[in-house]
Structures are given as structure tokens and as C-alpha cells.
Length: 144
Image 1 (cartoon, helix red, strand yellow):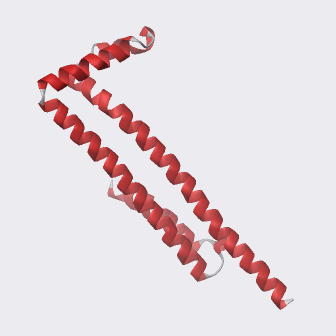
Image 2: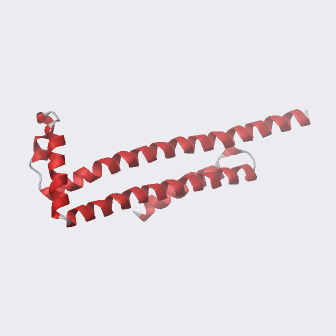
Image 3: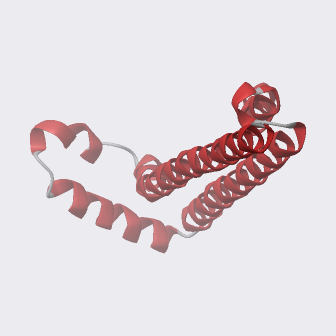
């Protein structure tokens, strides 16, 4: 797990530093710094979503009244879905239904955060690639 987090956080940073299309060392360093800030921000957002989902699930699981309410809502929502796809979901134990009910919004939110992160990575990469090309063209025109 540590290797995955390290690779996800520092992989784009190292890639920016060794990239040939980012121009001079200063431009590559700024790109790597922007990528690192983006990666750390995404990691913090993901941890907040995961932690919030965990704490909410744990709090609901401690209260029998809240748990029975969540299970009833889960059964009501699942009963509206096509039966061929979800027949097994209605037979799950209560704690598993609670976990499924809490996990769905967390997974959707984590998917949104990941998509936003990837989009931002591309924006950062393109910004510094464009800066390097502009600087290269300016240097060609001055020296010519």
C-alpha cells in the first residue's frame, strides 16, 4: 500500500523533472511542484471522504435504531431496481447492507475526485509544456 501511495504521489513529480518537453530546470521544477501540490490535495480529499464514510458507518452501526432505518431505506431503494440484477442484495445481512449503503456515495465521490485530479494533472502538464515551447521560440527569434 505504501508503494502505491508513494508512486501515485511522487510518480508525476519525478516524471515532470525528467521530461524533455518541459524546457529548462526552473520550468521543470515549477511543474513538479504544481504536480506535487495537486497530488497531495487529492490524497487529502480522498482521505477525508474515506474517513468520513468510515466514521459515519461506525456511528450508524452502534445505534440499532439508526441501523434499522438505514436497512429499511436500503431495502426500499433496492426494491425499485430491476429484480434480475439485485435479488441477492435484499438477502444480505444488516451490517453488510449498511456498508453497501455508505460505500456507494463514497465511491461516487472518490470517482469524482479522481477524475478531477487527472484533469488537473493534464492541465498542469500542458501549461508547462506550452511555457517551454514559448520560451524556446522566443530564444530562437532573439538569436536568429
